[in-house]
Picture (cartoon, rainbow, N blue to C red):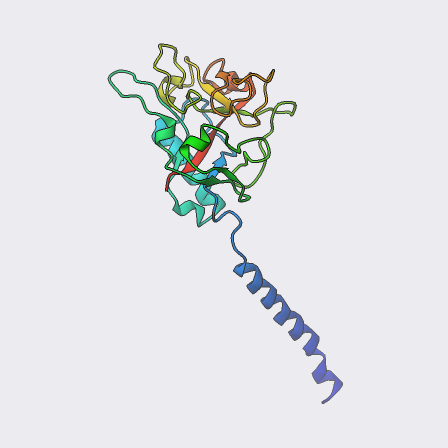
Length: 226
């Protein structure tokens, strides 16, 4: 065989190797395929006006589908309660998200059941990850985004009182307030509210600026209901 006929061989071998590597990469499992919980990486953009529960759920679903084809096949729900108003019944966040278990984008289990989620769960600054696996900036960081909208009491139910805690059923960004939880379980002290993931304090209002004033970005907890 002449030297000229041997020259293409290295290029051919490199091409074959490249194809093989590409094939191996495509066969790797999607690390987020089993994800059943995340904190939204972005807000819908209108503070506490999420378009109601329907809009909030759609936001969770859209982010899940963008992050992982397999995760996007699940039915996603925002962890939000709404209070009764104008003849409309109240809704408990805990009743919307299925039975569990739930795990984040890295495979860490957040909670095995509803009771576990509202008891000794594994939700903290290291596990409260976005749909892409990123951490949420918390207390001591700039910006601090640890205030997550929930509208819920510690047990995951709506507050039956007269004070608006759900930005008027998540339809208003002017007027009203929202109950938020701390995704990093960190606050001004070590009290139960300050370290609560779902019921820490009321926001100063429902606009993006008012949510940001206490360390929020209009982010949500999203759970795969099934």
